[in-house]
Amino acid sequence: MKELIEYIVKALVDNPDKVAINEVCGEKSTIYELRVGEGDLGKVIGKEGRTAKAIRTIITAAAMKQGKRAVLEIME
Image 1 (cartoon, rainbow, N blue to C red):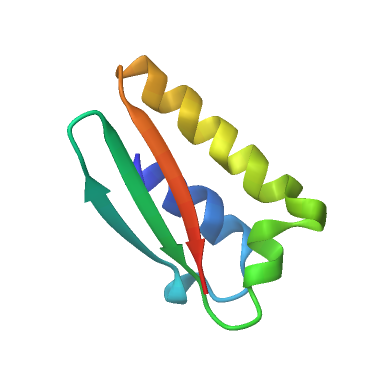
Image 2: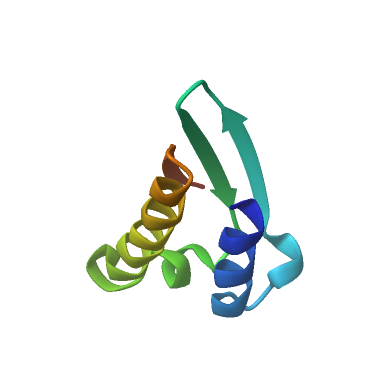
């Protein structure tokens, strides 16, 4: 799952080397904390949060196949 998020986000940003994802695992859910380089935050969030919502939808669908719950937090 972490690789999927990394693949999607690196395709969107100008500085793909500054993409960092921290994975916090729980029993039934996993939280992914995403950090990007300065100036790339807007590209990941998108207009009115549409890009972020689309990424979250993909992650949720992939996690449901595994019987888990995934949450994406975009950190500054």
